[in-house]
Image (cartoon, rainbow, N blue to C red; front, side, top):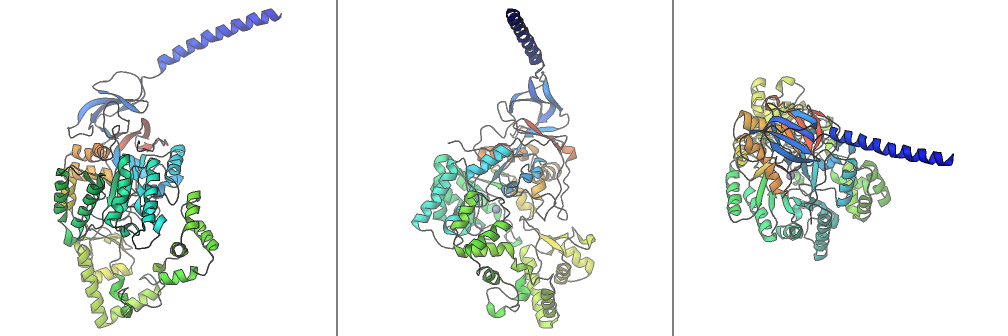
Length: 613
Ligand SMILES: [Zn+2]
């Protein structure tokens, strides 16, 4: 009995073994040769070559074949007839890391729908670490939980300075400088791609040229890149560009100028001289590049008041002219919170910070921060002093109207408003974004004045009193196109990853890449389509020293855009900034399908691109 059972078992085992072998072989013949096969598309490969017809085959995250009529089976076949096949777009400058802190925004759908497959974050001197968390923790979390686009991280010099010196305007002691260098080194060791500055922001701007140079030197042995929001983008643009180049020359790191432009009407045209300075440096083999967003208006929140508070409240600095003494000031706010114990302040901070839950690093930062900084940080977070006394409040309105109705005061206020408007961009370049009178939306202040049969300043006052939100066009088309034509200027949206529909934002977060293609290549024909595709694919890859992304080439990572040029729809407007763009029919990131017929597949295949030591 026992023996028979044994024979039977052996027989059964052998039988099963053969059967499973056969089954394996049968399945193998069914395994498709490729993961994705894109057929019949017009390829713009990242070079300046015109589009050519070719199929693209993808396997294991990589482009494995590129050529005419590729035969073979594929798990997914995309018919790209009439569509362009381009490398995935690389955004050289984004602030999506703030939004991506929250799992809901990790996909960055506003960028995927534009065809963006890689973002570079930690910009303008500001990064989550080393204050909120360590570089390696952020990278680990994003890798484990998944992100939409690939991401490379920079360390923010402003954040480093805040941690070591706080918000004080002074030079660092030698010890503090060493501490800052250590922090930059730590981030680079953990895979950061370089350093960023935001030299108009506090406390980044307190750093002088030499201090920045010392920090940039730290990234050089790693092959890091220095990204800079330069010190001035207005009348002192040229000095600011020269400083960036000087830092590059004295440190040995490549310098990349973020959102290159010049603002305010009186400075328009200055970009030509700035480009000449850059080109002269490039001729000396200094590695200088730049990026640009293709819009005439700036800022994450581009709307502005048409009435400067100094016009009716007096200058903040000149005490004798300040009349609204009952207005809540930041000193009042600090006085309220100064009465609390440190532990209580930290509790309030924890309850109100958007960075929830707090990392150990973040808690350590709170423990070490000077009391004065803690008080102002908590105060600023909980009470906005500006919310009291504006034109939307009875107090502010009463004071303003009283002054406006006084013949002499009224004349002075109107003159100040007019000078302010002319200074920024002129009434023809101030556009009504959001207004209770819908017919005025999209109109310029000049047009509103004509419709209302009022002077410019009185039209501005009427708009302000009804809470209209206006956008000044601080840049001009001629400058935008001049910069765009340069072969060292890539694309950088400067946008964020907002909660969809929440708050007001710049439309660049939703439409930069497709807007640039549609308006400047397809409509205005200011530059060629291959030129624009290069500016957002192979050029950024070259700037970042990436040798496996940014091209449609065999062996390259399969970050691929399949674009329908006839159906690019930009649904954002200055009255409605939250709207996903359309036109990217299919999107692949690391070989995974992310957009299928324009719809997100739910995949989060983005990788953290770390600087290889
Ligand atoms: Zn910036």
